[in-house]
Length: 207
Length: 164
Length: 149
Image (cartoon, rainbow over all chains, first blue to last red; front, top):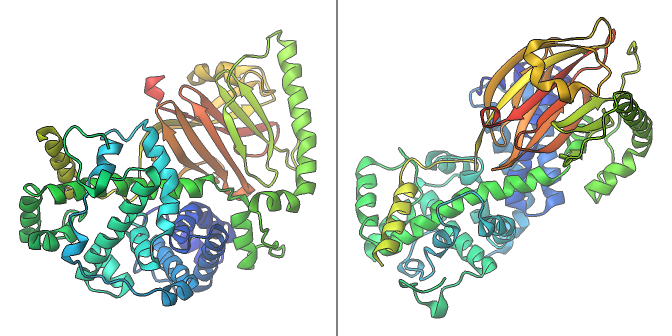
């Protein structure tokens, strides 16, 4: 457990209201960000995030510290978020996880990196893309949104993703591959960064 | 292409996530495959953006009512859970208009004190860019004093304070 | 052609290397002080607080002394805590960081007070963090990139 969470968690377990409040303040935005990435809707993400803390509070007496408090909190958040969009999941035709030859060799690969450049600082396109990221994410199927959120915001490893999602490590990697391809395509579309005539960029052409 | 089918899903892995032999084979493949190089470059570029974008969205939202609503829902707060406003911003103000009204009095008083003190000392009010300030609070802030060197935030007086 | 391929190859190496930022985290060095202001007694300023003289001058507190100070590095989005002399804590978070600006969030957990402020480089935030008791109150001061100002 993160050193600075431990005293607050122990106090909250003992019924200390301010200690639990401090934990909520500490994690509220990140929990909301995780929920938002999966459920897409801001108000729903707000409710899911609150419910996650309510569930945590309810289960605190039984929390033994075998995992970090934050890991436990985000696990609950993910489950609630996925439950909240369960109807969407059932309605969609399940995407294949396997990687086929047709999924490779996208002529537009590399355009994002070229456009963004190496300097993460003052970059107008970077800010624009960050603003469009949420909209691009919303176009993805729930399972791809979920795995991207768990990987990029919660920072889960392949092993942790496999355990959290109940899938094999190989499926984790291929699902991430598909999620990233779709996200990149959606971002390029929003930013108007398509390759011309479906052809790969060659030296000297403007993106 | 068959090699790409094997290696493309490995792109974006972190140190230690791949078997060492796979990691070596991946590096060797990417160094000679323009398509996988391009995909890897996009993964690197967009991964950093992803978390930044969602967390920026979370940062932009007014979280002042969040913790109180959680505390009310858990029964740790003496007041009942406030109704969830459809619009969090106007809902926040609707629920707290009495508090905001009470806030206005010390803000005016503190501003008057500030101007009194400055006038006494004969200083001209400094010209400066005010730091951008968002106040998201239940009324704990009493006054914001802009100074040349940065803002000074004062709390509302407590009821039981022994003042000067 | 070669330069573009080289650039992509270099970026690919970055992606393949130990690249695991979970957040677009930027490290912001800050200098934090906890200071005490008193309305009572003769006017006196702790010499350590000379650089704050002008900023504190509009306030009605006449005596200023430093309770603690530390330099630390804040990671964007990660909350750090500053301990106050009365045992309470202040939660401090860098919300945004750009070359010439920084946005801080200050939360006084026990008082249900939450402030978010964007400062220009070189500006210092002074934030009252305790109520006034016997004419005295504690303040938190935060300045980002202290060595560069």
